[in-house]
Image (tube, rainbow, N blue to C red; front, side, top):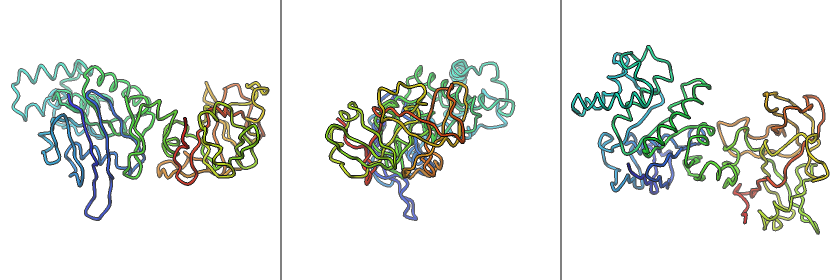
Length: 390
């Protein structure tokens, strides 16, 4: 087992393109860290530099006590699980799992012991004599993991290992991978573009954009305290609603103007953002998550008369336990620069609310939607960085 240290790691290609820019990360021994971000953000390049499949342009990579910049991939004591599994179709499951050990001239008896142990962990024992073509997608994914496990590496690297599976199997396999990693206690760096995978599997999540690390922290930290509007929008499903707003400081209250809508900040929010009054008559970015909205019919209107949107309902998606309400808002939506997320930020003034399934709000009607102003996220309009909280 080993810790992994990325110190000002950068990657620049011969054409001048910088895929990773000064990446600093400290991954603890036994930790499950997920690198997440949109396509082209540099997460897979960073993983490939750790693996030795890409040269490091600048910076230092340290695993355990060893600097590995110039060490061959085979000598780095890591095991990688690829997106396409890279199984040998003519070999049995048993031979696929044990292949790397055979290349290293490990005694056959030890290979058999390690392969059987990995197969037991991964519930592959009944299919050890089958070929990959006879397996389901989930079983092939387990075989790829088994090949990594038998090597008993210091570090696991996983590059979008679930992307080829259907939605139901992805849910099942992400739980299994997390469970196996915990039982083995091997330091794991996992790359995905799926923030749901990141949130459900990781001890900590590192969010990247444009080659830069945006924020690293526990899933709960990233969800509750995003460092900027991009992280706020990227983490959470459906995405955080983000709109331009203007701050007005009155004698006894602070009001946010979102188009023609006025929201009076709760006392709790003013305590969280003690310097919000310095933005008087200035624009800010206002973020609110769909789950912090509700059909006003299910809220005590006497609690906060200003915490409402009077809006045209554009679409109602009934999902059984809840309903997603898309409604109009005459405020300017904010683009956070996520190339994968055309629908993750407001389009044409649309916002999304996750409401009680009993709602009677339907498309083509006008409705009243409550917003919990204690759960607002406020960002500087020019930098999109979170306004300093307490």
